[in-house]
Image 1 (cartoon, rainbow, N blue to C red):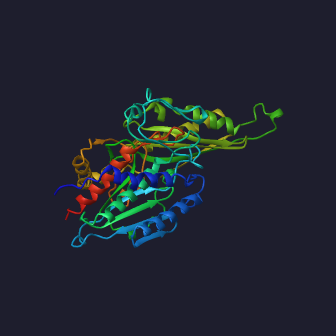
Image 2: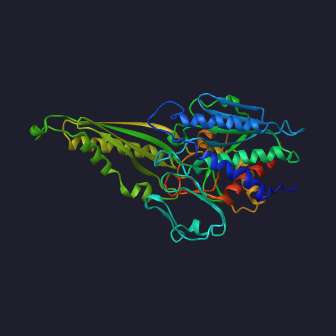
Image 3: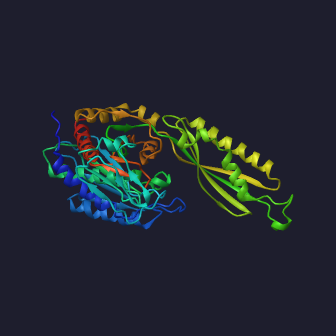
Length: 419
């Protein structure tokens, strides 16, 4: 059966304006807050998506508390018994840099020259190979005061753009389709209270990746470790031989983390330790450390190493104490997807049908797909076109975004021929 290849012009109008609209929603999540969603802007965007999806003519749309948008597009006549396929993206943006009042700038026919941003930032094609390759195409970038939000509002725009295309083209025969939008992915919560019973998909795909061709089915095993340092406090004038400074204990602990096993020193399949937040007083200080490794046993070994570092600090600071608590954030999804190879094979076939060169690679991070895979629905990840995520120099390639949306449509077509 011949594939349907949507024209760039039609997809452009379905995807780009949506993305420019979505990034204006302030949906920065907050990992300090246990409740879901951690910030009210995520509910605002979720409600807006419900209204939009219903406006497209999708009757089966619901906002499931605490903050999950689920929409179902019924199968074409005669395809009701075909397996459902889902597409998922997250509502929130990271809190590493500001995410409020995003001013996205659309550059048409990029001239290949450096782009100077606010705050002394710049986008320089001499140091950014991906950017250099975009000469003559359209890009969207931040103004330098905030992140852009392509992670993951590009994914949302691509999914809903593809859904509208599907609705406008009934000649594209397909099985059941589900659209899923989730909160607090950036906090690593892992789909708390996710309504799995409402999902019929045999497989799903997250749109939460980078350049065109990146297709991913393995990710880190992730733990968040909270180290608490309890000091021994006394007046500083009488501190000799008595004071155990909790702030200094935390600083020395952080210094024990091997620099050769940090995010900035590793790539590919190498794991790391990453201190993400430190705060405290003389009496008590806390240090958050992210543990990441593709091998789960090695991740657990890293946690054990932190406990040994804690004993070292206690020996260096008599009277002080250190406690280590770890919390699982998500597992590597590789094994469970390997157990159902058809899911990723169909993805590769869809990409090849569209002339997209596949670049399978490990995710040096995670997606909500990792948790959904753990819950029983294999969920690889697809490129969404963004670059420099979580930064004030974030940008997105429009052609990549359109290709992602086109890939969704081709996946829907292929799953509509799977029994």
